[in-house]
Length: 168
Image (cartoon, rainbow, N blue to C red; front, top):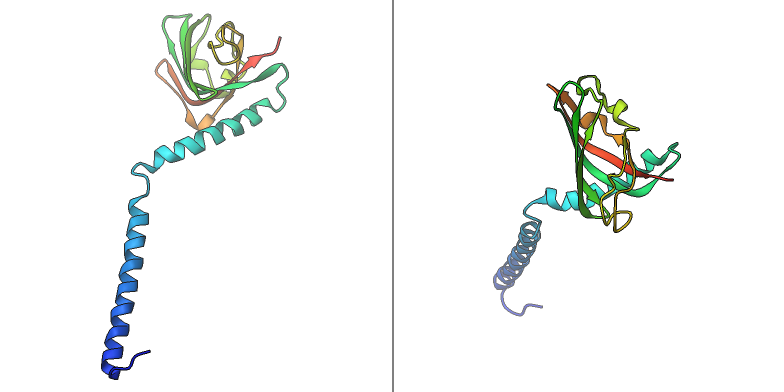
């Protein structure tokens, strides 16, 4: 309630409204500035595990004799001579870095497709600390995400691959 003149009451009311607007604007700015500087980092922490679970569930459908935990990551295959290629996996298992490489023989990179990589056997390549502390279990490629598969000039790059353990 204002006992001064109407003009003074109006000025006081306008000053109070201006103060409230400034406070609201400051709060909005603070919320925007507290957003992560690199939003894709936060997204990758949420999206990648969700994608792994989705790919694992898709990969396990109809797959007899395979089990988790899943190895999710990228694969590069390079033709080294007429009959041999080097298979390199770099990814994660249970949130930990996992990687291995091996020679595929006989193997022809030029005739390989994403679909033909699915089912590829990787004997004795289970990384230590994933399924067991010792590692060396047999693996099989179960899913290769086709839009992220490239085969150019004797080199294959598959950015999203799911590999599972072969159940004995």
